[in-house]
Structure formats: C-alpha cells, structure tokens
Length: 69
Image (cartoon, rainbow, N blue to C red; front, side):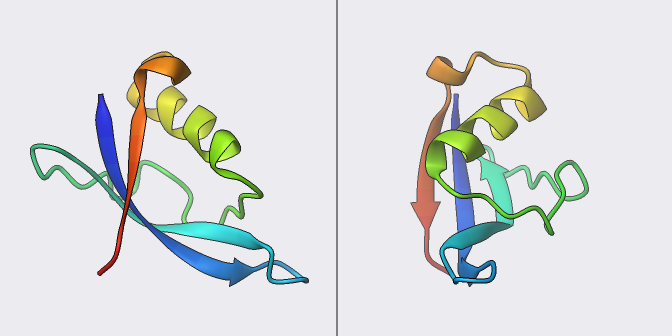
C-alpha cells in the first residue's frame, strides 16, 4: 500500500521534528480526522509505524511518498 504525505518540517524545540499536514492514498482518499495532526515525529520510521497502524497493514507493506504542495 502507498500513502502520499505532506510533511511540515521545523517542529519541536530544536526544529528537528516534523508533523503531518495531509495524508492520502492512491485513490485520492484523504485520511482527515484519522490521525493527530499535532503529533510531532522524529524520523520517518516512527511515522511509518503510526500510519501502518492507521491503515491496518504491516509496516513493511507500507510505502510513504513525500509530496510538496
């Protein structure tokens, strides 16, 4: 499964964390309200684990594409 994500960088005290701005799949479905947009992540591995749980797939089966808006 693939998800497209828009990431907002420069979060956290040191600016070394990021937050999710938008998440959608290949069919264009937006996962609005299905994740906490205020959560700050330290790395993409952590984000992949959270998103895999959200869409109920194994972490290894999820591909994350970063997009620019």
